[in-house]
Length: 164
Image (cartoon, rainbow, N blue to C red; front, side, top):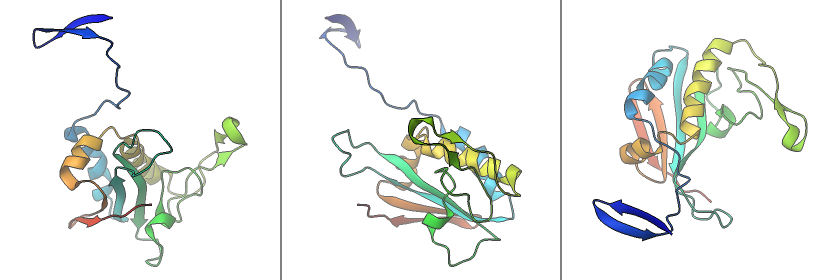
């Protein structure tokens, strides 16, 4: 039994600690976004944000998914899934990236493939921060649940997103 207090009121019982990701303030997201918005070769970027309806028995927790980037060198016909940069599977069409090497749990990150390593690094920094859900609270507040967010220098478009 744990003995503690809440607002000076004694609390008895076992308190289960949360495994929630510690959140970071919006002020820390701004330079990551600005690094892409100030790059004239980046046309647009975005992500999906939602609370899953089902998660194989695990809690359904709001999160950020499918971060993507379109550069001036990318074909306009490519869809957002083909422009993902944060999954470490296939390199991005114009930015390049890393492939996973090996099998199962022993898979390692391979060397960078491409000709845009510095730009790719800035993109990865934003993608990693978004997908780590350290800004989930501020993004949920800003754009809502079940949303597809597209960011351009001229503005941000939020569309309803239905997921499986």
